[in-house]
Length: 119
Length: 229
Image 1: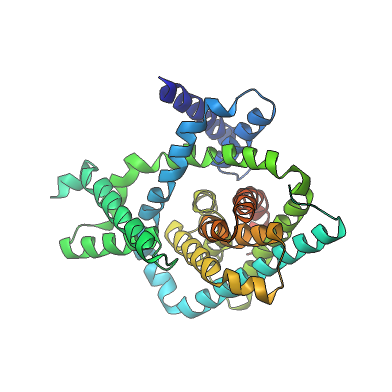
Image 2 (image 1 turned 60 degrees about the vertical axis):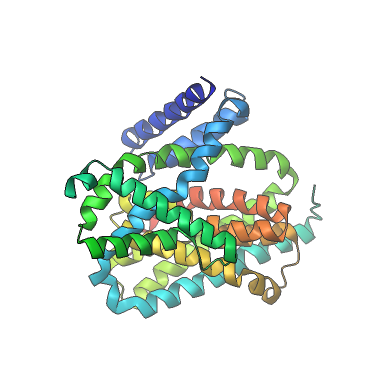
């Protein structure tokens, strides 16, 4: 029963997220709305971590499985990307390198300035 | 054979078996190149081409499982909330780093796309490359991109960040554990986070917080670019 009620709570937030996506004129996926709502509910103490913990850990652990099907779908778009593979790879590698540097260096700079300590 | 595809038993078990095989391989050789998603995709494609079963049928059969992606993504709020409690003191620095990384990523991809004259559908598909597939694919779909290309770009980015991350840390002189976590999570999402976890538990925790924040931020900011691409 524990798992059923946890799953029920998560499905409730899923439905709320999907509803918000349809009600609000913003191009934000229902999953993001749902995530924000659940986070808010946890912060406000409306939902306790223990009330969703087991099922959420399970769902997060099987999540990578659900990416296989969309990735397999790449063969359907192959004609559009096959002659641009090199620029695509360059773009991905270069931006990953730069994002790594920008985000890391800024945080390190702020940590030093603000004298941020680790817990 | 075709009706086995239709009732989802074949697609789901095929995905499950190949994914587990990928996980086993990764555990054995500890190489980020042996990413379970990557291995599963390759094996599924080999299977489909040998049996001549259509990709569309396979994807349709996986629909019974795919709908769980939205509730699973929402569950990311739970670890995010737990890390928020642990990392309270460092939150402003973490959030600033993630925001700078996530926004600059979108600007760079869009700029590069315009520079080399990519079709806009391709640029849109590549823009969520550094965020978790859960949010990235949903975004790509909503903006009219190609989910297959987005998934491939995300997996490639994660593997690249995971392999090159330690070298990047030396190059950028990132010595701070929190700063390293922000870099791994913002640039390499879940796959980068597994590398961050190997470096230190604190780096891993910061990385998993960063990847969710980067995903959320990208979801809010990416649509603003739709007029420029």
